[in-house]
Length: 336
Image 1 (cartoon, rainbow, N blue to C red):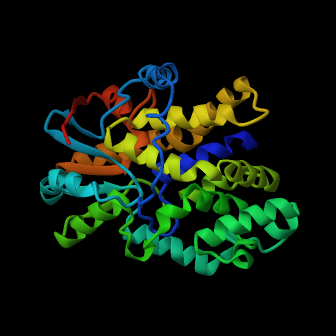
Image 2: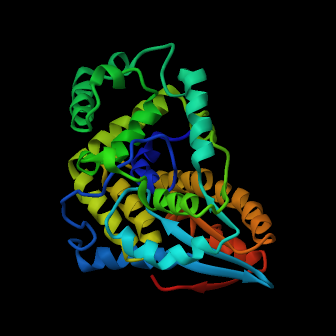
């Protein structure tokens, strides 16, 4: 069972998972929560981040013999600051033998095919709807939040709760003009590779997100919605903070901030939250990171590789960078 307290980390999932969400644009106006913290709290965030290997930096080169992998940690929402990143990495995309991404066009097509064949993957086909499962006040809060995101409550009521929590992870302000969105830096990388005929390969199966949440009970998923709604008032500030941290190359600070916000919610047990975050890191990052390493290494044996995936996968004891180091690769942080 996935503990309900882990729901607050869903706000970070836009940076760790590629899922069937509408393309969003990072146009929120809000306060940077880290900048406004007292100095001691801010220092504690960075100290916590620094306790893991490779805590900062979004652009790296891994080499082993004649094998070269360029790794770019991505932000899955659109932002005009991606243009500078693309200027830097486009030559590497063009010269790569393979571009690796979390999910490419083939995976998106397979995902849509699965959903067309089996709507129950994302829609509740039996049991209570969200309108029936939530209290009247909870449903009213959710309805208001979804209307702000351009989604009618009657439709949302039929979605699986975990998916609704993912929608709540994208602030309403970030969905302005979403029809123009490119899917963040990932989408820009994919488009560049397609334009230049560079082979694209996915790091994982298209159904990864479904398998990640398949073991969750209905009550766990409902609790995730409740906690996400509790953070709704600061969602714009949080979105601004995450984007700023990403473009400053502070990947691990994003994770530590989410942990700190979780601890601030009323009635939380710090020890339980630490255990919950360890479990979430194992499921969402460690297990996936380990599965990606053979894919990265095999591709590198065929020629230079550029790999683009969520920035939170880079740092940590079981981050992609440390795992490549353990596989014999030398690592070099590159400027952006």
